[in-house]
Image (spheres, helix red, strand yellow):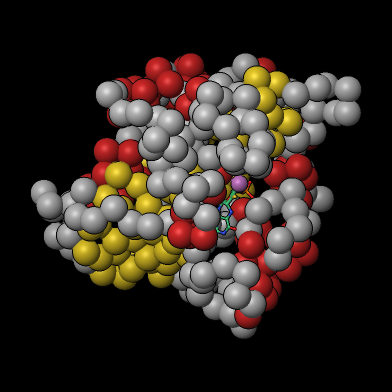
Length: 291
Ligand SMILES: Nc1nc2c(c(=O)[nH]1)N[C@H]1C(S)=C(S)[C@@H](COP(=O)(O)O)O[C@H]1N2
Ligand SMILES: [Mo]
């Protein structure tokens, strides 16, 4: 029988475990407030059955229903562009077991729902430092696997496949930005972006690209899939911002998945609650223009 931590450990044990992990190094760069500490993580079932992963279909249940057949081993991530050591890297090279940290982060989808997810992963900066970022690199571009045989919606033209995303180099190097390979202490289920996916907790969920096969350091701002599709609605930055509405709905509040019918909506936090850590990245920028 498989039990998630949430089934066997009350929140206090969860918190103790976190400070244990923190003692091993994560806390040095990550203040307590950066964790979604006061909030109860969503259950394994919620996190793995309510997903956006359009390669497997557009309904929230489609990824869980259809992603099981995805081959995630072997897997290679091609890292190239403006780096000293370009090449094809295994997941175990990028995120070895002894380097994994737990990060309990809020995830806020642009569709105005949210969860709290206990990821396991490594800082993206660790990977970028290992491959050697050249001085000319200003942005990082990411690409998801293109494999229509195993990703049924890639046989349609619903999106311009493969799914692509991008970050500015300072966003990519920020200590909160991770490459995740697990959740609840277990390997990532396919529907959550196995075997390795990006997690950028202060941005709308669509920036956190799943099942990454290519990382390219570049001097040009990459165009991301949703931005290309509908540039008035989805920008390059996509920072969570309750003051800048989506053209078709308000971003002021959100629905926490699993909160129950009577819980009501909760207020969306600037930068998804990570402003203390990341606001300085955007000093002087007009966030209504750079949405
Ligand atoms: N390749 C790929 N990555 C993706 C998506 C997608 O459709 N394809 N959906 C994004 C969106 S909109 C969200 S909200 C998050 C959801 O992550 P989760 O299902 O693990 O909660 O994944 C993001 N990453
Ligand atoms: Mo999303």
